[in-house]
Length: 400
Ligand code: ADP
Image (cartoon, rainbow, N blue to C red; front, side):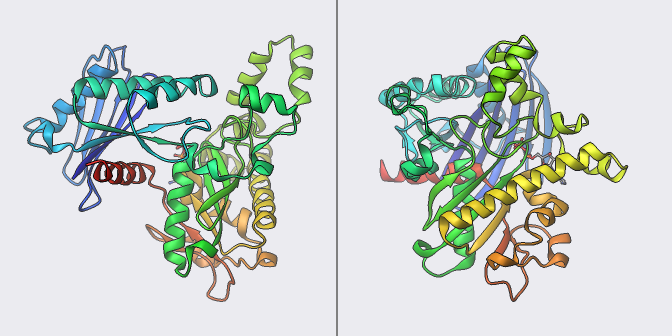
């Protein structure tokens, strides 16, 4: 069975075609500048990479272009459209309606539309992507996989904000959490690596990239996570502030003569690593600047590590112990220095990092804790697309 995974953005569309038997990517790529001049990067792993200049008026045009590439003589990996069994879509917000992946029908589309006000930047492109695929690939099953779904198992103590309860009931203001597909993927992989009864495992997953979130996973279920009503809450990120005293918003609005929406933009786009350092939102640039003696770049990195470490401590308390601490995503997978800052001194909770393994872990999934460490420190490359493909294949098999 072949499954196409689609991640639609406002002017882009990323895709990966999986051979589910081999669990291999047959082709992947990204359509960029949809509605503008248009460019497609199309990759057939270990074979070739193509860059195609192609005007795409809308997402349906982009989907058609992807199909044409997948079937093309030189660029193709399929014989006919019928070789695609289903399409799995990444959808950011499923609200409280979706606690798992679902086969898309009209009711699902309406429910995703109802979540648009919760994710006004992210859900509309997903809907456009789903409709574009339905149009171009008439009759091919479509599945939605939500970033929020994994965190729907959080208990009310973790997801209710201490606001008038009416705001939760009437406006659905609550913690939703994000990066759920990644937290689920790496916690499931960690459970496999650890062995034993997965229902008994206590795992803390750190998805550290441009956007970062930490999750507490008990017996395979998310019980708390650092991102909240939006992906702005939690640890400071590339350009996002993370948690700040909420009173700062109205203070800044007044002092700087900004609207609340302007201040929120500052918190989303000009804060975090970029705001603190004044150098860059990219952790590699900050490492370089720190090596050259830039003190604010060092402060940004220290603050990030400090915030992540505080969450690890909080979640160890929530879980009453920890069997594994997992690092994933761009920073978590590649930045040994950051892993050391976060987990170099966690022996009090039974986690001892092996500095040699941490410095040079090698490719793929790695255990970077010492042999004597009571709990494991694991490095697990995330693979959200694979999990979307696996969910899609399972739902299609069940509905066959
Ligand atoms: P996104 O949230 O956009 O998916 P990523 O997970 O790709 O972000 O993470 C981006 C961050 O990861 C950047 O700050 C970058 O510095 C860092 N990063 C990515 N690759 C590497 C690498 N090979 N070495 C060090 N840092 C890396």
